[in-house]
Image 1 (tube, rainbow, N blue to C red):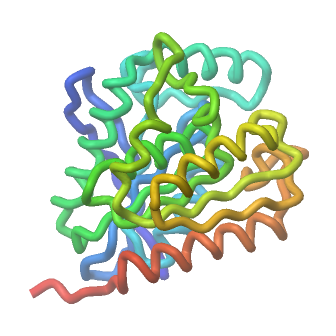
Image 2 (image 1 turned 90 degrees about the vertical axis):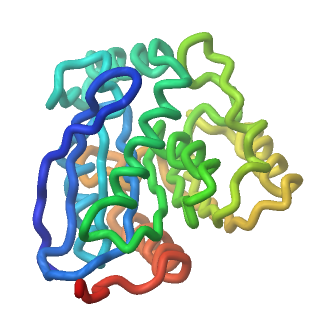
Image 3 (image 1 turned 120 degrees about the vertical axis):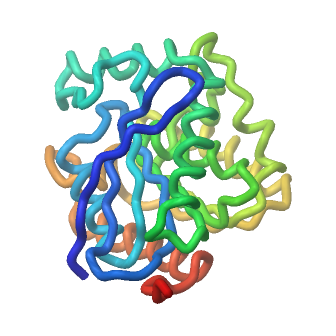
Length: 252
């Protein structure tokens, strides 16, 4: 379906958070997805992935994850300088700010006139970690996490001592965990740590490891794998369709 795009600024305890919203153009209400970017914020590949989600019948909110550290609208480049800046922000931002951002975005979606109130999360790279962490909110019914970095190292946010892995028992929705076997950022031992923690918690999840490099979903650059991206994006759509229900609910 065709989509529309709007810009929202959400209030958080750590300052205003600019958020791109993609949603179906057709009248009605649709499930909501909080979609987290890589460390580079809302780049072209992230916008296109969000648009693809919206075109399948979802209201998709994409926040600027470093809103208190960069001017609104900042997009970091896919180069060494951009990666260094994004990685520096990742461990400068307060852990409480990441959590406050998630709550603000989820509340925005649930109150959006085009949303049914059924909520999921999805994220890529650091966004996979943030989508996973956001799933500790009880109203998140499903989370699709693509090569989620740093969960195994507990190195998210200022102090590099996050408690994400300890909070897994709080997750009530279903998790979809997708990894690349050739991803140096999350080696086999790291994936095993995350798998054991999820399995031991009793959480409902599916786990997929593919022959792919880090950033295989990003539709530009040498690591992009179109065939793998299609398969794994389809897994996310299956999860959201099953857990969040159908969209296009008529507005009375």
